Length: 55
Image 1: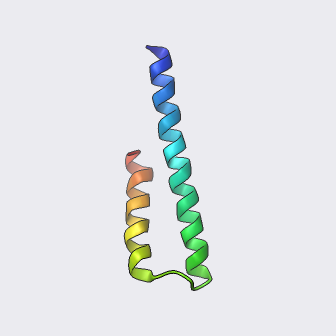
Image 2: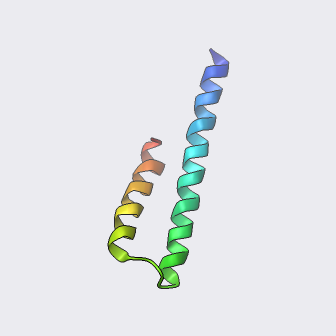
Image 3: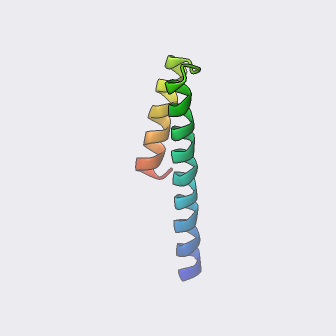
């Protein structure tokens, strides 16, 4: 049982890490003026929900 719980924690942590990496990547694109603002707003909402919700 403990192993399963630890696995789930790792999966959530990994997802959050990926979401944060994506958010940082998109933020860098915005700062460089290379991103489409409509797409980015949708993406940021999704990423923030992913980070807060964990899935």
